[in-house]
Amino acid sequence: MRIVVIGDLHAQEAKLWQMLDEAGLRDPDGSPSERLRSGETHLVLLGDLVHAKSRERYAHMVGVERYDEFDPEQLHQAELVQETFLRRVKTRLYQPHYVRCLLTL
Image 1 (tube, rainbow, N blue to C red):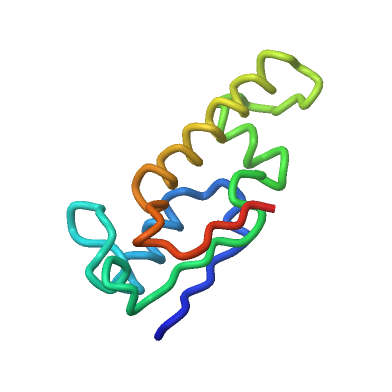
Image 2 (cartoon, rainbow, N blue to C red):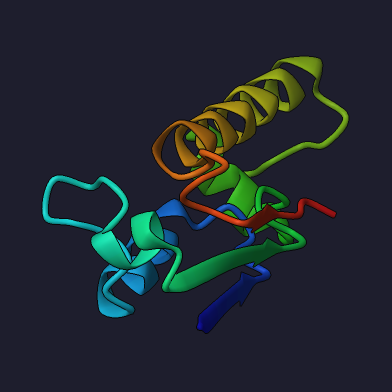
């Protein structure tokens, strides 16, 4: 059995898909590879999946020059981006027979 652990993505969705591709855990169409489907490989996602970590990264996420964490509209936009990212991860990967563990801390 092989275990692949990925953590501290900080809302960098493209990096997640790239790492999964490099580890051979996604088919070309983006679906889980045979390694995940068969249980040969287990994927563990740890902490800070959606927390962007810096104001600069949040600014990029919401499409503003300077991110203001006290601006309700910017907070809402950041939440939407984060929720969408998690939804894509769960939709594409988190099926009990493909991914053995999904931890979001």
